Each structure stands twice: as structure tokens, then as C-alpha cells.
Length: 257
Image 1 (spheres, rainbow, N blue to C red):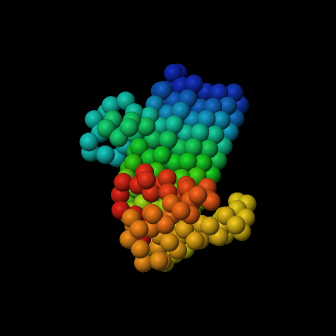
Image 2: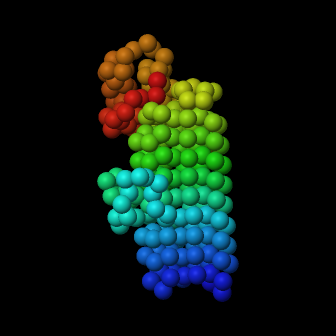
Image 3: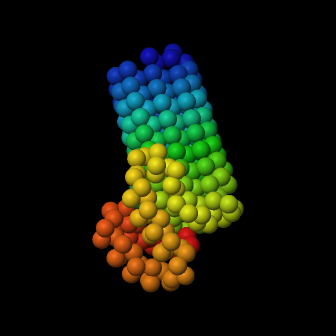
């Protein structure tokens, strides 16, 4: 299952039923879980741990050193979960010593061509990164988020679960769960991701509660502290609004408004 032209370091740990394509390079301190497919011309540097049943296609560069001038060669890691699709020319960097030391990718994500995930990012599950989308360092992306083509997220920003980042949007502030950013180069809230929620089985009652919370936060003319008070009342009857409140409590940057 390992092509004779591939270079695999003797210290690398390769699981059962792993295939490695022609001219790929697997470095030291790399672990690859069973059933994972590595295409041709892929470079994986360690320390990197990759779970099972992932598919990594040609010319991807995984586990490279962070693109951070402060990085001094300290030991840092990249951890990738299970069943991810990583397409051609994607780059994913390891963490930095002063940024937590680890970059983490969850399960069942799609990283399409030319995606970049920088150092110390935390990506959840079922996230779609469309072509040429990119994360700067220390970004957090919640489950089921979609980043459209050519979109980007500024360093240290958080994007909540089920958010939608429109094509070409540049996100420079925290985006709450369920919110859709679109129609502006710098990304402004444009409603909730209703279509995505419907596809994931959210019923009309849940979506109505999320819409009401969105109107409170963005359309009622309230200051952020005033909106928080209103949302506290709405959260009593909605776990989704509670999730928004939890996100607001964790947000330590300006909120997209």
C-alpha cells in the first residue's frame, strides 16, 4: 500500500490499510490512522497525528512549521481527527509554543483546494472550507460552519457553530452561531443561516427562536449589554439561544454587528 517512490521515516507509525502515493514524504513523529489514503506528492511533517479513514489528495502540505516570526523551533503539534477530506494544495500548520502548542482539526470536515489553516487554530466537526478560504492563527471555528470561496478569518477570531461566511468575506470580529455573513468584503451580518439549519433538521420552532434572537442582537437598536439582557429571557425556552449566550460570554474580541 506504500508506493516504492514514497519516503516514509522509520519512526512514523502507519496504521492498517493506509495507502501512500508516489513521491509522498512522511516525516518523523507522524502517526496515521488506519484506512487513511495519502495521495501522490503529499508532504506530512511531524509531530502530527492523523486519525482514521481520512483522504488526503495530491500536493497537500500537512504539519509544516507555523508561519510565525516568533516561532523558535519548539516542539508543537498538529492533530487531525477522522474521516476528513483534504484536497490538493491545502496547507495546515502546527501550533506555536506561546499559542497553546497545537493546531486541531476535528472530524468529517471538507478542506477543498488551496485552503490554509494557520497555527493554533481549532476547527470543529462537519465544517466545509471552500476553495481558497483561509484562517489566520489562533482562530476557532464551530461545528457545521461553511466558509465560502476566497473568504478569510482574522487571527484570534471565533466563528460559532452553523455560521455561514459568504464568498470573499473577510471576517475581522467574532461571529455568533447561526449567523450568515455576506454581501460585503469585510463581512457584515445578513440574517441567519436558515437554509443550512433546515438541511440539518432544525424544525420551525427552533429556527423561529434563532431568528428572534438575531433580531434582538442586530435589528432592535439595542446596545450589546441591553441585547444580552433580552437574550437571557429568550434563552430560558431555547437551547439554541443559550448556545448564542455561551458564545457571547466567551467572545473576547469585538462582535460582528
